[in-house]
Image (cartoon, rainbow, N blue to C red; front, top):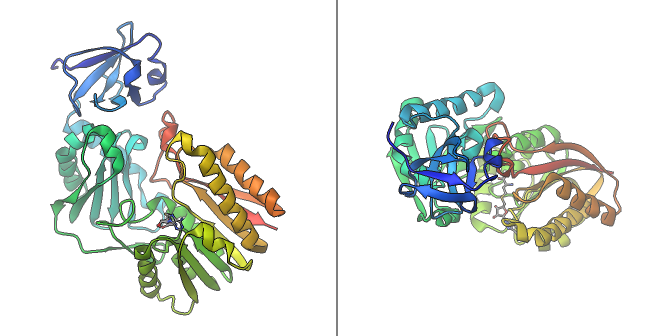
Length: 393
Ligand code: SAH
């Protein structure tokens, strides 16, 4: 085996690694041997010289190493192929439900830190979030092509966090035919057009799929308010579930244009809907209390821990408004996708809103990511989507 660069940790700093956490922070390192260049593979040892694992370095990042294995082994194409196959066996049809769009690789959650691959039918979309994965881009393109035979692979590494890795943002076709714009997908009887080239995330909120399915199943006869609707994912499912009427709010004109397209594509012409472009915080204040189902799916308010107090006020305000707008015996689907907002705090915020709104509220279910967004238990930071289904009396 070639001699690899290595880092040796300060005494005691091996504990999180021994418990399975995949990140080594630069502050935990006592010294390095060999040249640590961005994306290179190397080894990590505890202060007393015990081998802990191998991973990818990035001396420019606070996370100086992302662990790939705890065994001394060759990290070649067949190693990564195994990881992809392991990810693939989780994504069985019977687990995913009826869809041809899902997450193929979920970074740390699939033990491939920094790599995200989403599938939209025969189009694959790839995000390389770290220097390590940037370096392996070519290898993963080859592996994806040989395992899945996609028509195209498109890169959406246009993510600001790449800066922290010392990488520029990047996007464009990596393999195959230029993709139709947008790409049509189907899930649970609904058709959508995902703008994988320019849309938010990799084009669609795949992480809300199971929650959309639930909305479809309980929408019949309800007057629905879909706040932060993006291209109308929840609303189209509500429409197919025979909602009575739907109001959608989003601040993005581009997204709202797609909503109209989605209603036509799904032949929802019998369901009255109205689109409101604006700031949901303001719009909700002027609506009448006449809804039977509200979906609140705002963007992350707390991207950093320090943002939590402000974010908490934002969530409280939104949930208070939503509770005010709901009629007797109605449903609220309320979400947060802020990494730093934990279940306990989120529930307390919503409870506070219920008290202020003077409503009796039952918790029916907690909802998170679907099965194709697994979280490594040793890496709880990978969990970000938290939602509650509430009945409002
Ligand atoms: N529910 C959507 C995803 C929502 S993502 C789905 O399942 O597909 C968050 C959305 O909030 C984005 O579409 C963004 O344009 C919108 N947004 C961000 N800030 C907003 C604001 N203050 N008021 C209204 N919409 C906002």
